[in-house]
Length: 477
Image (cartoon, rainbow, N blue to C red; front, side, top):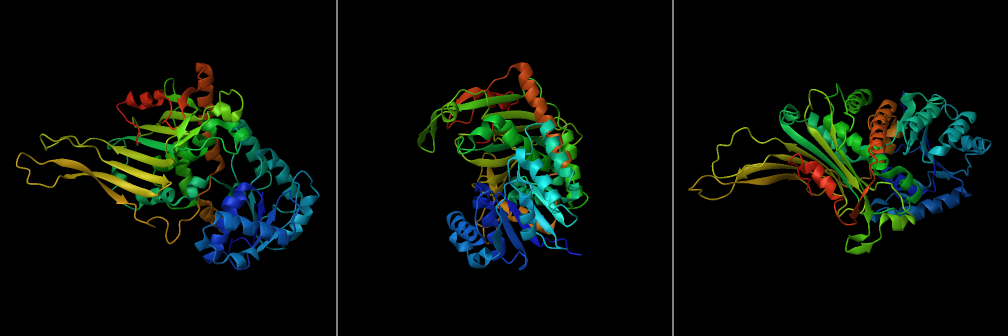
């Protein structure tokens, strides 16, 4: 029996995420013939709109945020859409949503993009309207709590209505092509896996750098900070994919079993293994920008930058540091993973220096993979062979994007509709991530650690450079 949903119910259908990501992703899937012709898409939010008004709203969003060459099926896509206003605090309103979204015997996929404080209320409303039965599944957009305790409260509320097999927790990084290609790179090529251990790898760097400041996320970000906003979810998921053991298959349970083993093997961060920072006024992208305190309008001890030295305490990774770095108002927008291999044990090339191999996996804004190798410098070399590092790049246009550059949400929405959990995060993963992050925050509290200042447009506090350089390591910039 097919597990493909017959209807998709979008909560927060008039919000920023829906306009920028969800509606363009669904339209692209429709244009590429990847959605069942009979799939209905029902939007809901507090705004009072008719079906026609919502379609006009969606058309405006698609014209603003979707490339013109991907809108070929827009008119037909808009005909799929309908809308039902709802205040989730009013239980009676869910009956009208159920009448519009659910039909007897059909399967319903629910995408919940609301404030976490409304999760429990929304779940109870869905239960009361009969929208949590065996044919229903639910997707949750982050943030899933602000610590382990609040995360458990949210997970308990969802688990009261849906079993784990029908809960889809989104980390949109897992929908990116190059992140998925990391799995293919490791487990579909025999040359890498024998070297993927402490004998051959010196260290790993994971960088998520942003050039933007607070934008429209002022209240959320000041409560969360860089550690909870980026490290707890995106960066730990990337670390888990780099470090996990080979799963028995590309199956949701097998892949997530191996990721959670890594997360549980993370050693607690010790004194001197973390640096926090907060940006001050500076220049980025050729423009003068204000400091965090100026944007916020008050003083704050929230970190906008964090660098960590992490360790995975198992046989494969014993002694290999994982350096994590993320921040706002940095010089470049960049998300990448650098795998630094060890030096060769003995060089036969006297008079020339060999450079250890590197594997650089670019995730955004450019998706590419570069393997740095040593090669001979052209020439006759009468006084001995000269060497240089040369890159082998997979960065040609469309190498990872196919005909079109896809939004990560395209893959995740399609997997939700088709009920494939492989690229979604399981409850034990989320809670293992929170346990590790909570311990870091407690360590900061004990140390009385407060953010060091750094100028906007720089790579963070100088202490972050020292964190790596103490081990003879330089951040990749």
